[in-house]
Image 1 (cartoon, rainbow, N blue to C red):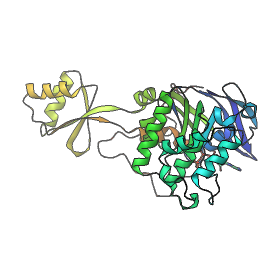
Image 2 (image 1 turned 120 degrees about the vertical axis):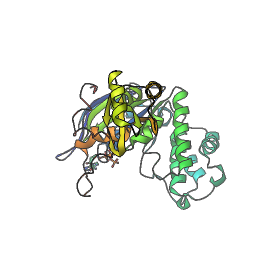
Image 3 (image 1 turned 90 degrees about the vertical axis):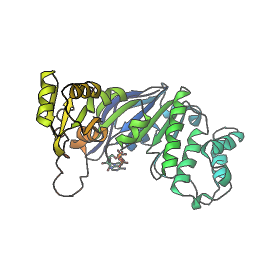
Length: 328
Ligand SMILES: Nc1ncnc2c1ncn2[C@@H]1O[C@H](COP(=O)(O)OP(=O)(O)OP(=O)(O)O)[C@@H](O)[C@H]1O
């Protein structure tokens, strides 16, 4: 378990992390989300004792990092920067780490196997691709067989096969009862991996909630209907107590009705349907709406695009995604 309490980091006038309090629990993958510059890496560095908090406190299974007897056996981490000597082989890099942390040499072979680097174990790491480098970083994190694992943007630079592999690895580590804390700036990626979400923006906590709750509250589902008899369909739905609004492309968007029911109503009234499909608004949009105010570096790409045809406009920054569900 990782417990943050009022954790704050200032660099001069800049407040990188602002009074963060939350708990990362074992047995599930917790996603740590925020736009670029939100303070994710700074928070992770403070968890590992690499940066000292200006205020507040962070504990790993009840202790400060520097109080841990064999830190690598308590918490393993992959941070963004590569932290190894390019002239060494992957195997030697891990052997050095194992020997300086009282870990059996045999563990090196095991973790190389786990991350799929056995075939290149004796090659110098300076020739490694970004994906191989990420795998080596993950091998180092796993070396001490720790109860807690922390990954900073682990899918950066990975190909689809590598991304799939990391996703499954994180889930299986959590399935073994470990605490898995993983940062990303991509909501779509986290939606496939994490069960719980901590969202920050400009160093502040914006959400601490389960993924299921986040999806339920932030992704609107509706049914899209296209018919040459749009007005008639709308009247039929209205009579049945179902609300339909006109969308782009001659379609209707129907809230609160199942496709089966809508299809049956159309059949009863002999209305021809050209489309009847369930739709879900993207979580990425919900995440961008939530964090919009706290994005540090906006792209200068002209005016923001309007909603796509048939798409409900998103809320203004800071509105509608609501404060009610924000905890902490
Ligand atoms: N050593 C430092 N000195 C001054 N400012 C810093 C330092 N480290 C981080 N910052 C600032 O603190 C803020 C948070 O940075 P941090 O790297 O923690 O964000 P992040 O969420 O990890 O972003 P990214 O997704 O881009 O990696 C940024 O504004 C950054 O410029």
